[in-house]
Image (cartoon, rainbow, N blue to C red):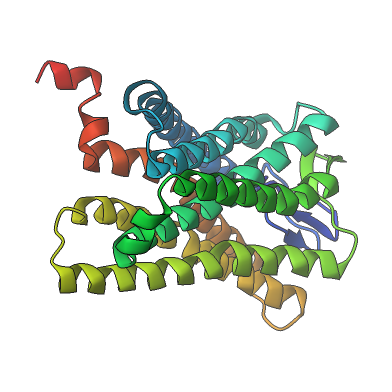
Length: 315
């Protein structure tokens, strides 16, 4: 999650295993503009995500309550976004002044940002499956009854366990390193296996599988609604579908970038370093903006959230 460039340091990886194998220009030269762009975009993401997700959290806990499994899963999704947003703050500072928080904070904030994004993907998938069962198998969903909350708790615990387990290696391998332009927090992998494992676990487990599940579920739900002519569920499904489409738009370019990086590590594919920098800058900022989707979609698309806006009482 770092985005720094170190001059005359070889075999150093950063931010989702972005590996440099040869000397690059210094921060004051070509990459200075990228650092400023990253810092500005990070700040905008934080300014949208933090109040938006905090508002959702307040509405779910204080106004709506956790009476339904859907609201309970929304709570977890919102917490995931907030974890990601809070840990994005030191990385914003990092792009301006380098890493000033020490080695322990380097490990903890790296773990936190991966935990936030991994759990987001897990809970988006769980929410989609939950809605799929309710729409496609309504008889089964109603027969479950009180056990629905138990299944929700179990699936939530599994989602957090998977997220924690796969984010821990990022914390273990992250460390501070002195460079000619300051101190930086970077993942320093000690083998090609761990580097490729990082690429493909993110691409397969935290993008392709969730995306395939989401596409399958929404396709089946669409046919089920058309056949049964149930219109009352359209709104809730449109909200989840909007988040899912946003998920693909945010994360597809970055995962394509990761795949190209894996080919680069295997000496199968390469580009000019300046091209890598431009692609990385665009795709990772787009990916990080995912934490803004949840509040925007629910506030503008969900009546129970929109009615709790401060100015809604005046209008």
